[in-house]
Amino acid sequence: MRSPATLRPYTVTDEAAAIELWQQTWQEAYPAIDFAARVDWWRERWRSELVPSASIVVAESSSLLVGFVTVNAATGYQLHTYNVSVTPGSSVTLASGRSLR
Image (tube, rainbow, N blue to C red; front, side):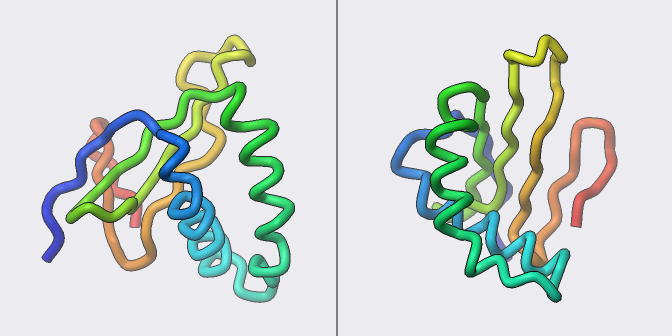
């Protein structure tokens, strides 16, 4: 069993793990789409659109990145979540008590 997840701000050293997690989670959600073929597109979007404009928080468990959330403050919507990605097969419980699986 993994240790409980801890949250911390994203750093550039998280990029590879975050992009890999994006691919895994979207591939599981949409198995008919080849997300491996879209990794270069996502990496460019991540670097040029999300990282410069969003607050990104990552979740770590046992020294592994197991989740991330991006919040775009430029939209004027507080807590406007663009994406929540959680390692397939794991679970994250939100403050509201709702569980993401």
